[in-house]
Length: 378
Image (cartoon, rainbow, N blue to C red):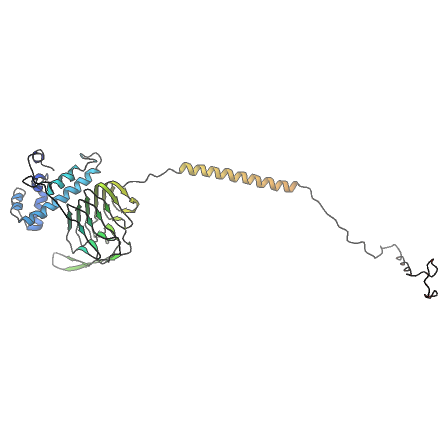
């Protein structure tokens, strides 16, 4: 929570993250000291133990607290009925605390530089370990749009580890990936830009080294390996014993684009931005917040009307078919008879058939016209 006294003091030129942001309990700090430095004291001595550490070690805790506040600030935006629903105030305050615009003397602070990875370049941890990338002055380009990168490219934790990104500008993946392959969460906050999951191939195979598990007796076992495929943003849980990983993507002034590569989440997802596009390419196994839901048209009435219309059309067609059949049945028959001949055989009981007449000679000797030289006697 933001310290009220520090926030209300306008004369304070530079805020300190660990002074301004005090958690309701020191238990988080105690657990961190025990995990990383073997601290065995209580909550009362936790602050003194932290102050006694080297500045680099204090920075580790400050960054962890920083990303924890960013995550809570992004989730408060989508929290229904919460104290800061629809507001990025919590996240913006912690950004101003870690990256102030003025120094202790009141002079303007200038941040410069982008973070860009080319080709097969990548950030990777094995057998556990987190990855944090902060770019307070520019954008993060984790992959390019040209040639497809090899499987070694991208930001990957091959083992239980979180990936936490902050950039003033956009977070762009190109054809690369941000992936936790054996448990771990992913968090990205773009203060003024976009978050784009890119268009990497979904068939790319990322090799994951076997995970070594040690028991209380010192026995070592190798957890089964499962190949990790694809690009984009993904928290994978390839086997049952791997805990699900959450994804928090925040772009208060920009667009979150799942792209062609997509976003795959084995746990819960929280998305907050001005625009969210390609939401259909976001696969979530747990709860989701901030993902726009496509309005589904109720097609029941249309289906009922279509069925009624089809039934009426079928009934009309059947009636017309029956009418045509009945008309054909009532039509009178027409019989055509053609006589080809009478025959030459006599009827039974009619006597002998008459003799045919002798053929008329072609020349008549007793005719009026006689031809000379023709034998009249035949």
